[in-house]
Image 1 (tube, helix red, strand yellow):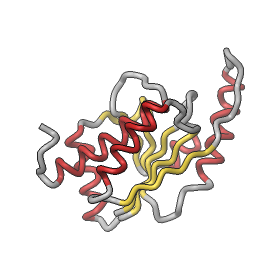
Image 2 (cartoon, rainbow, N blue to C red):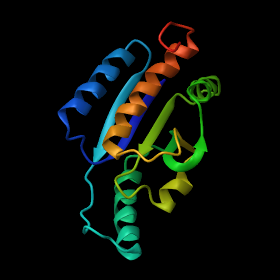
Image 3 (tube, rainbow, N blue to C red):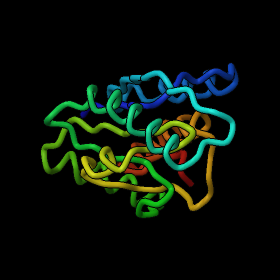
Image 4 (tube, one colour):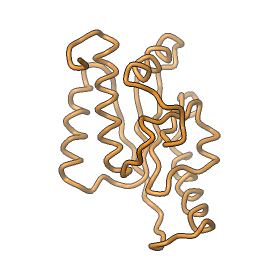
Length: 159
């Protein structure tokens, strides 16, 4: 199985980068993870609906260029189906049993994901009804990936 984390913008905070790198290191025995970042689109301090829509559309176009046709695409969006850690592990297990060995997780920028990209996703999930900064969410995602593989293998960590 291979996992691609496709996100908008670079993770700038050193403490977040260090956490992400730690979990990516921990994931190496379980899965090959590739991180792909596309540049954020600039926007004003109080973007109106038209500006917001234009920004997420441009970011969505950039993200779509990195989606492979055979990838199972999971969009991460606060309005998606909420899943527990166990359900997330089950999602990965199910894809593996189906032979879908390439999974791409898409993380939007500060304004979220475009409707077009959400429509392309095979699944739209949420880890919480809370809102997280998109850079922090990448750390949460890699930790939950690690947790999912530990759950699937019934290895200590999760409990």
